[in-house]
Image 1 (tube, rainbow, N blue to C red):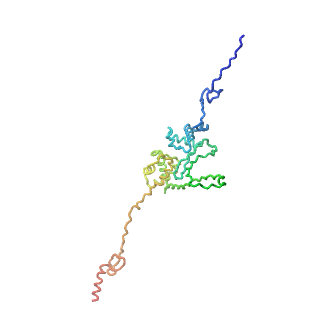
Image 2: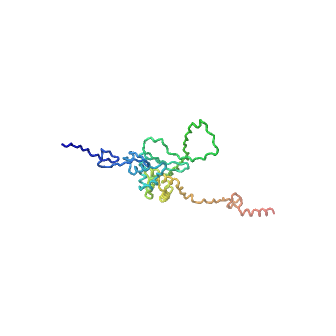
Image 3: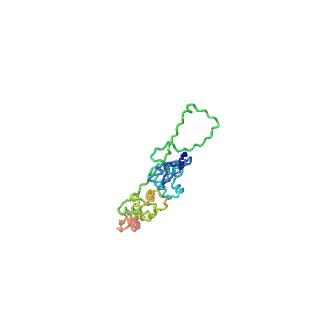
Length: 317
């Protein structure tokens, strides 16, 4: 009888990288992962799998987190970099600000220029790390020609005090001028001014106002109408030479309504030249012939004054 031979089972096929040998997905995504050693950014699943952010917002957050410190991330720069429109990028930035991934604020530089500072958070709500942004290296100074005296031993052993960062002083903001108020407000004047503000978006879509803005600016337009300004004149003053883009329509209109307000129209009495005063000499009765004549004081008329010397002369002879 022949000896029975034992045949070994075949080897299992090698598994693909990134998958477990005992679990093989039948559908869906299969990851083929390669370890990164340089040029990579760590993105949390709380951002990559966020259930309330749009795909544009998630991609924009990943792009911003991959940029070095100090890189420009303004809307104009992002619009030139990506094919999305300015409106979609602006909406995505607002989404990231609402969820705590971005913080944009206006700050004043020591030179006085206002810039937008953007802070990116890779994990909103977490305590930030103590690692600060790298400061610019100071320029090396030229060593002195004569050797300096060695510092005392105690000063060499003590660490130098850390410099205290003092923010530059900012100039106080000038309070805005008060909005003009009509002298005699009426219901009809209020309705006309409110309708005028609501109609502005037909002539300038960038000046679309909310109901609250219209209620706030209505007294200013009512003052223009009270001063006999034509609606076309007011519209031309408020919509000519608008900045691009108009970021705050209500603030822009408030400034123009206040600073471009015309004076009240003068009345008819103000335009009439003053009349010359005529000196009226009163009437007097002559003491001799009682004839009426004009003089400032009572006395004799002209005829009696000329005859009086002749009569006196004949009486003397």
